[in-house]
Length: 476
Image (cartoon, rainbow, N blue to C red):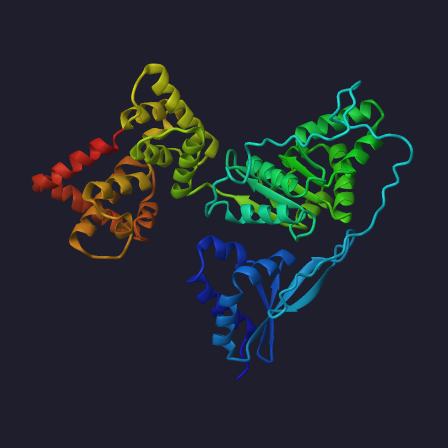
């Protein structure tokens, strides 16, 4: 009986889901479509050449095992890569690549010589009346890869950035679009890539510019009738980094000139790096032809850092500044400020300043007072993660056990107490609380809260546990 290719791929996905992280599955496997199954060869369609390269580099062993399990020892996998044929074509074409072929498919850059003529080109970064032969890259030396803490939330973007830095213009990540919320490290990573390229390729011209500055320079060029000089200057850059590209939204003439600069750089094998607060699909007020080009390479997102990453960021900052803080203070800062790396580092600086100016030792009480002022009233609602940590520390239990499925009495009791305080001290839904406690449902959380209420009325030792924990969790 002939197997259905969709069912075969669904069977493969079921196994893959158990072997990769949820984010990895969503990013790398959900977009894949099964195309056909012939002679034990399953063809899957991936959205770009980069997808093919990433799967071959990171998941090829897993894929081979699963395909052989589903299709037997003769089973093979082929990729159908959808790519744009040329700059003006809207019709994609398909390239089939067997898993045994590890070579990336490369389109040779189009040669487009630039005849600059005899007239010298004006550098928009030079103040009129001053001469400057070397272009200043505008890179911040503090924003290096060494100072960029890697975690699950930024691993893809950092890895792609490092690959670009090793071979600017020579990877599938062109353009590289880094997007994410405020304070998550987009600008830092963009600078880090530029600095690494400058270090490895001193002869390359690297330029970092904000979209706002680019726009103002273009407006000045229009006023001074020097638009050609403006365009030619940017076309000479080897690595162009544009920060906050979403600010081009609604500026039609700026988008138009950037479109032509982008085309020239891309066609001549130069590297383009962009940052944005949102992915191309969500950008409003941008021309479709520009959005289409943003999608040519890789769009890598920076997500909210995990607790472990936030702690690592604080420790890195402390180490670089030569300061030491108690572990409970560091953990409290990391638990309290969850969404913004910039605010996290700002809280650390504020805490040190409070201690120095008021001649107070840095302890948990001072951290609580400072956090309350720093993030106003948002810190009054502690996080579920912090509640779990405090409960586990109190009962001297590993947090992994609290989230496990074990039914040992002391573990169950600690888990129920954590659920009780999470319901009492946060605005999280019962389902969310259950998910944080090992994937329990809302009925389990309700049962836990009832159990804790009953025990505190009948067991004085248990009531003492709750009183101690409430003091630890309360914010001064």
